[in-house]
Length: 337
Image (tube, rainbow, N blue to C red; front, side):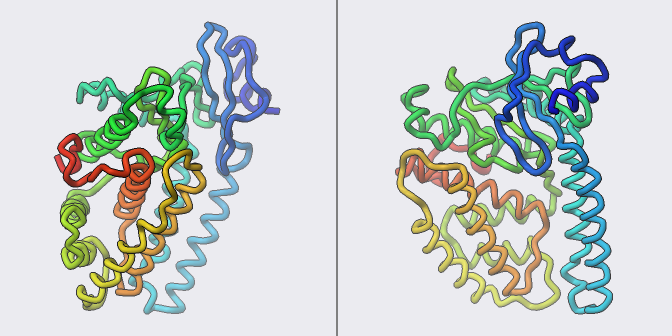
């Protein structure tokens, strides 16, 4: 069946482009699945193929949610300040973008140009084969490596896992201000340590863009985290979040302090660390922060939530690969540069 989908996207016989396609998917998600393959010219590639009908299904379901949210806002005007319909509309826009692999191919090219412009040879992204790609199918260079959280396997590639982590973090930090977007899904499956020691960033279906006013607030938030200033964190969160009421920053700071004290206990010990386990931890912490904000009348923009989630991922990776490293004092890290 997968060959039929690929043939339809190519508009010509599959054998003219691919010498081999593995019928068993390497990975599968709600929108697409990924298959290993080899081009007739000999290159090992992966093919990301959109599942049949998924775009129409998402459009229908999300349109229903949007209309429902507008109805809820009309029936309960007090909820309108939270902009439920705006949240659903943003989700709809984001997921429709994920369905457009031409945009993802462009994101890969832009990130490659960013790496070149910053003279970064320690990180890379897959090459896109445009002649074998379309809006619903993306053919990319196949990377061979291990997830960033597989410490035992990383040590077989490099004797300095800590430096590898610093490369990944500095690359991502630099993209916040020197690239037109940042990778907004840096879970362990999307960060690979390649056989030559480079860090491979994959899957650019979800990216984030920061407005200047949001970035100013986020920068202040990061600065207060660096020095453990919970009152400052609370004030920064109020500036970032949308609120229609006076926020007691003292109580917000107290709740943030309690969450911070619990965070270390949520981290497992070093060693092989499953991607699902990392995702669960990060999502739990993010939900706690959002819940704390909501309890104090704050509604955060999507960009802040995306940024915060990536910072939480990197925090987990530090606990796994470099538990002795202080990310706020280590001069090898360009956190706010």
